[in-house]
Image (cartoon, rainbow over all chains, first blue to last red; front, side, top):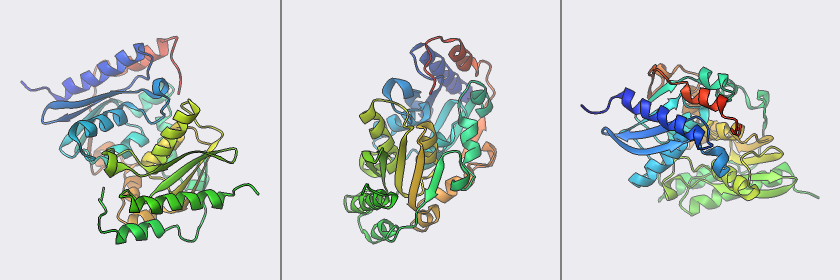
Length: 157
Length: 157
């Protein structure tokens, strides 16, 4: 019998649990294609000094490296916990086909993680957020987009 | 006279413009602390097969490497365009002090980028999003968080 969604999620949770013992954050993720695990990731933020090294992003980067491509359509991601907004954004950019998760953003919040807070900041206008954000209108700010539109060799992503 | 917000943003836009000629996406970003540029980043998604290699994330990772830490409080980020949800999430996790940007998410959408679409997906319930997302309730899914709470050597992030 091929592995089920539950099997892959159990593996993601086991990775998360092991990672706590290894000094990392309590999160794990897998990328799966056609029933095969392409890549695994665990949270490595504090070990490698990279605030973007969440389990899902580590797994996405590793899967792209393994498959030698920058999109992961036809792949699913299994995460021990509901992805935070950063990882959710990465899931869209990677064009993943499906997302399965076990614990929720509320579970993460109870454990002291900011996922829920960041979700609540997303829909706000930049000026209303907890981190000061400001648009500065600048002549020429769309020049890179115009150059992109004109660039025959551009690779859309 | 020290460099102004406009000067840093003009540099970010110049990086974005140059990056189109180099075969990358039309985005650039800087991390600045005390008026000094700590790191620069450009979009390298298609060149390095990494869907997370947006200008802001490249700059954040590089600044953390340069400063040997996983948070960037006391730093500001200057981005040629309003950060997408993935990069906005990274900005929160990095605890950046301030964000300045020139072009808007609507400018990015006009140029064919999905920022606006992803923003609109964020507040939806997982089951309502364009990418299939499903929570699977799993016994033990909060075990990693319980282990984290008990782990005396944990490093909060």
